Image 1 (cartoon, rainbow, N blue to C red):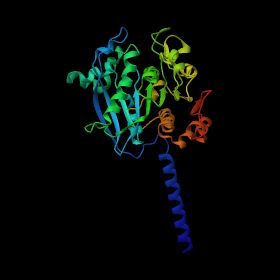
Image 2: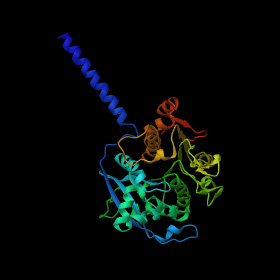
Image 3: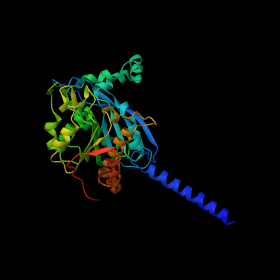
Image 4: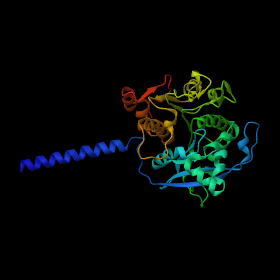
Length: 349
């Protein structure tokens, strides 16, 4: 009898420990959240805006994927701008992941990328196979694309009161983040600068290995000149920035465009600032097409990006553990991340 009781106790303890481990793993920011997600593709009208360096302004619409939690809202809104050349598909994993944790997520194509989606079926079918990226080559300036990021936010906020919309009652306009990967971070920087004076209200900015729009040593409009004007909380997550050509730090030469370190240093007036390097990551590790298997660098980008959003958009105090607490220290000691110097974070909630 005693042996059976002992065996039962061992089994019970093993089950409890297994359950605790599973709960701990599930509670990590990069783990899939509890909410079911609906994905919708929408076409958003935008005005003609033709400027000398913005030929994409001739298009009158852009296409976006909406990731909407299937629960009672409202939810914080996150808009993420993709890399160059590229399309919204490269951030599908981010969209589903964030929405499962209770965010409304919009991943838009830029106008040039969207053009191929509205093309006749034979061309559109090529686009679905991933060959649509050349359409993004027409993105040459920041004006139209940064304005469009703000137009998408205003569109989503208006949809919140439209009873026929998938976003009806879902959007919390008081908690809005802009995010961008690569040149998407470049456009997001300009968008936030414009929003500070003209609206809409943006709560925080997430820059995922941002680049400048450079041709050799020439930058059309450098985000580094705009960064000191930003005042809102900002996070910069960087790759190793060592992949030539293009996907390397601009300090390495004119064929390099990544400015993660430089923009972090230029963000001198933000109310809060946090930055780190994902050890071993390359520039494209930010991308997540929604595969069930993700690399460790992908997980780290998502862990620290989502932690930042959880803190600033949800006032989630537990997220600080991944920013200036024991979880961040563990990742540093294990060689997964390397913090940038000069972070400015609240000590507690």
